Image (cartoon, rainbow, N blue to C red; front, side):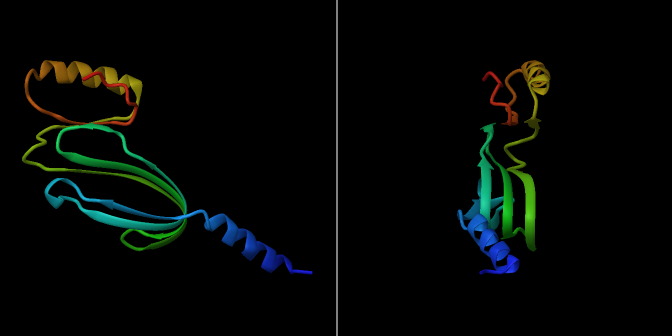
Length: 124
């Protein structure tokens, strides 16, 4: 009969076994390039974007390396933009912010702004 310790270890191995993920976010002109690796369960979202930028949302449960080792739950988002191309960076996280951003962007006229839209609701 296996002990509780070996059953717990087996459950942890089965839980962490679903996959290995490597996130390599190379921004425009390698600005803000970073590499993250994770063994465990990962949820990666690439939000809508306008302009020369890179944006990633990642949630992980497992073991990994992101500037240092970690074990457990980790969530974060990374945005890297080329300052020469993005004089204004707009990050939209809710429908209300999308409405406000649309008004601000309309008032800017023809100027190019870089936009990261997590709601996928911004009309372009």
